[in-house]
Amino acid sequence: MNISAKMVKELRDRTGAGMMDAKKALQHTEGNMDKAMDYLREQGLSKAAKKADRIAAEGIVDSYIHNGRIGAMVEVNSETDFVAKNDEFRAFVRDIAMQVAAANPKYVNRDEVPAEELDHERKILKEQALNEGKPENIVEKMVEGRLEKFYGEIVLMDQPFIKDGDKKIGDLVNEITARIGEKISIRRFARFEVGEGMEKREENFAEEVAKQMN
Image (cartoon, rainbow, N blue to C red; front, top):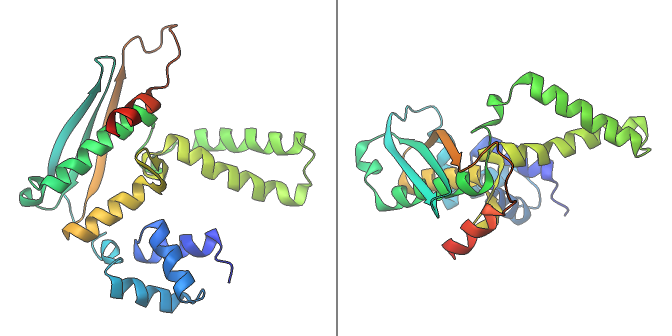
């Protein structure tokens, strides 16, 4: 059975499971949503959803600096100070700081994207589709599909993880939440680059950071 992206998204929204785990569950249950949810619960992969409403007010602030030219600082929250001292949690926070430095997101979550910016992008994408000669009846679907790519460029939670392109940062948050047993939340970040806003030589910082981690 063909498992659509819409089915995977629905299961992820309902369970908090990672993208690949949700797809595997749907394949295992031949697309049956209820059975897939049961499968994820049995595998312990839907725990993140149960913790979504908890308050995470502890955590740490960490930073990453690449060759003295680009740096990022992030705040990641947990429910308890005990977890904030956990080595796996700290390694996760460092990965997020590296992600911000390399991928240069503008927002943490989709709901932070200003409506004006979203409307502007949607208008441009619609004009692009029309200029490509696409029929009116599929233009809107194309626009929504291309907006997903837009989100993947500017929203941290939607960006592919620089260490594993098959996972999004949102998937990592769900995974560490399930493993550690507490709600984990990326609250905010800041990114700095030497000479930012000034004319300078183009460099692929994402590639540099990725090489340094391998």
